[in-house]
Length: 306
Ligand SMILES: [Zn+2]
Image (cartoon, rainbow, N blue to C red; front, side, top):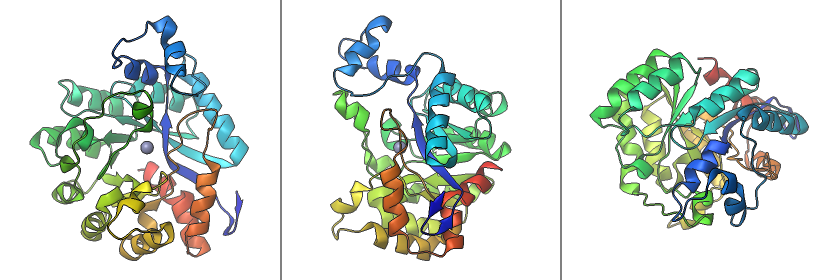
């Protein structure tokens, strides 16, 4: 892609794969869940989205068409509800050179370890996503050890959401979001990241409102990365409001360009890939062309290669 830094090979470390199963899982949490045939009629009343076909390959092809249109080379697609890993696995099978599959896991579910084993051994997953505030656990809990050992054995990536958590699509549907941020402190990642040196941990959105604590932890753990995704609206809620250029500058100071991954947090159609987001970030980063090449693509490609 032609940018102010010259020609960049762009890869996006944070895109949600809103499969049919994703929507069905959300709808099951509504006060009166719709039948399968009525699923999108009901959801369409609150969500102005283009809904996907049942087979994930069609949605994957839609995404790849979108990436081609914008000149994006590769993308992390995240199965964004527990139990949906087969959807992103199918997307990655259909487009192995374009899609890097991650899946969301509730590590407290009785089949969590089994799911993780299957995901890495059979489904070719590259990353596992944890939302401690959503599922009420600490990353350092003993129950996670065998799961992390499995990820380490496959040199996988673990994405850990820290700080405030807002899931727009849940809010739009009026679904309750009983998230507890006390579980989502970067500090709880410190010993885990040291113990599991083979795992690359990615904390999205610069750690959100735990930004300074996150940087503190990242400073001592070279296997912790961040992604730049979302509107980063958390910046406005800080005691001293931050700007994107300032956040970039601080992160670069502490972590260096090699541990920052561009992410858009794109998710639904017809919006598709969030080009405006990309342009905003491109403007806000005061870096050399080499650093830009790493942040906007090179780092993710390196991580995905294992
Ligand atoms: Zn996201």
